[in-house]
Image 1 (cartoon, helix red, strand yellow):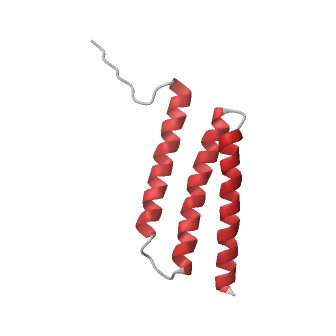
Image 2 (tube, rainbow, N blue to C red):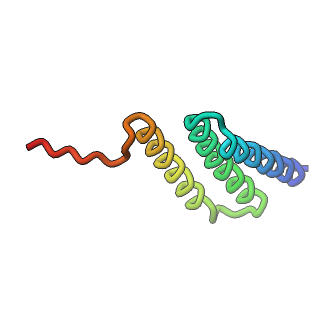
Image 3 (tube, rainbow, N blue to C red):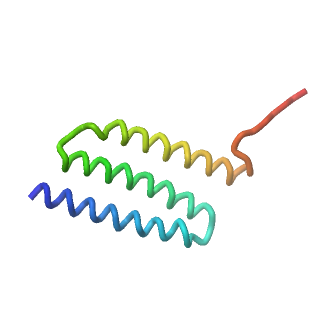
Length: 94
């Protein structure tokens, strides 16, 4: 029964990722696209965790951590770009 529930949750996460991908492509505004991209990252983390539970291994924990870090850095970079128009600032106060 637990295996069936895990597979159903993996299917739900996959369908959710596809819907977020549609929002990423079709999004009316750029902030909507940024939120969709962040949500796709979160769904990838969830799918990796479910696969790790189904396979009864903890080998994917580093992958989950790496995906979380990359999703966070990507969201921060996009947010900074939307706010200021540049990601890396070159302040030369001379």
